[in-house]
Amino acid sequence: MIGDPRFFPGAGPFPLARLAEATGAALGPDADPARSIAGVAPLQAAGPDRIAFLDNRRYLPALAGSRAGACILDPVHAGHAPVGMALLLTAKPYLAWARVAALFHPPPAVVPGLHPSATVAPDALLGPGIAVGPGAVIGARAAIGAGTVIGPLAVVGEGVVLGRDCRIGAGVVISHCIAGDRVVLHPGVKVGQEGFGFAEGPDGFVTVPQLGRVLLGDDVEIGANTTIDRGSSADTVVGSGTRMDNLVQIGHNVRLGRCCVVVAQSGISGSTILDDFVVVAAQAGVTGHLRIGRQARIGAQAGVMDDVPARTDVLGSPARPAREFWRAVATLYRAAREGRRKAD
Image 1 (cartoon, rainbow, N blue to C red):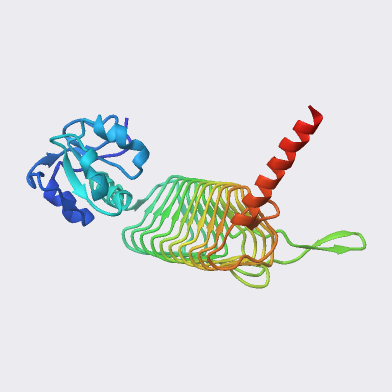
Image 2: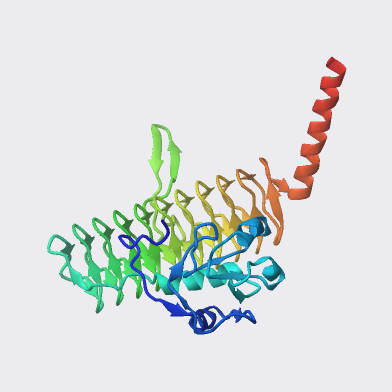
């Protein structure tokens, strides 16, 4: 069930005119602006009082058979909608859907206060309207911005700075970090721990002190159980608007630009730089001391061992430009087929 009220308190209903205003979409010619919509649902499950969306032509059959009262879609697909379905027309249906879903299910309001079991250092600076959950710890000289929520059993280390309206999930541990506004750290995230740095001595390994910080820009969102090492001789930097999935590893001194996307189980080794709007797909690995250019895209399970120019797609391990990779795959398959024919 989408939007189970036990977990997702709802708002509404709203008239179609309000939904169009929130999304910037245009109402279809037959849509009644005053028609009331009670909530959101997928095409296959929506009833007459729900709004759905279509962002992939593969689901046109589902649109044709849907009972949804309204649907957000691109104007090119409007002719596939059933008679009587109200349409919100936009070139970016998924973006509009995000805004509509947030309208019906806004983030829960912050309930300010310190839980009796929380531990807060006497010299920590707490902004107005913050909430600190059970068992949370806020260390000496930490500074927490107004409206921020610190979840159960989270630890905000000494000297850490968090901006306004941050959301720090259960079990998060933050040290050696300065974060901007509206930063979201999902449960289990670890930020600011020592990076993997050591020198080889005559009697074994000698740990290299990790003396940098982690700098998180505004509107950064980090998925559950992701780890971001602090810098060694420089800072680890995550640019504003960047999103990381669950189970990502970011090494020391890595610098991510604005609005990068790093997907689950990927790893970026120390001192590598990702310019703005880079995408790293699932299970990709990027070795250290590289530069990945603006708007480059790293394919799933790619192993990147060289710099990647801007606006280049790479695949495979070792990663190669996408066209070169697919040519190599095709050549290998042809060779395999010829080998089987000769063997027969």
